[in-house]
Length: 168
Image (cartoon, rainbow, N blue to C red; front, side, top):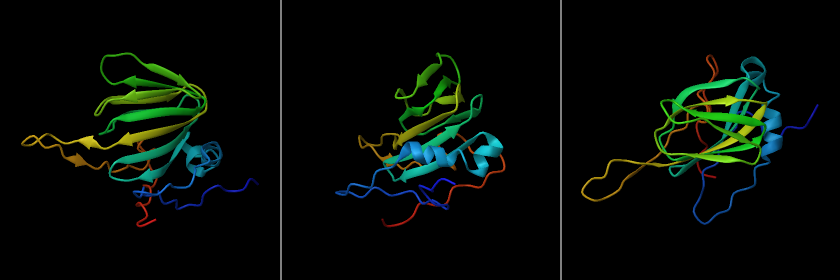
């Protein structure tokens, strides 16, 4: 049996000003996710790595042919393919973008989209805080609250991710 890189329940880190957080061994974490019961049963799984008011980072794995239902992320988003190939398709109009290992795609705030694994894949979703409506010339920032997997809505019947750990 391979050693575990993380333990469940996993608590996402909270970024702290003036501090560099430990590195994430993304490929090894993805391999471990692909061995978990949720992936075996549903073809996908995810782990929220970072959760703060300004940024949420989610590592997602998906089996070839798995499609993440249409969803919308409230902040600007970057999706980085770590392994495999996936397609990101907008909900209405526009064209699908295919990315492979090492490629990334950017999505503006509030775009409905689906994600389909063309090959077994792992991808990192980075979700920034979104802008609230401007009021009297001031811009307010609203935090993004991660769902069970943020980069993909959770498969039906799977438990929600644990709440972010406090402190750090």
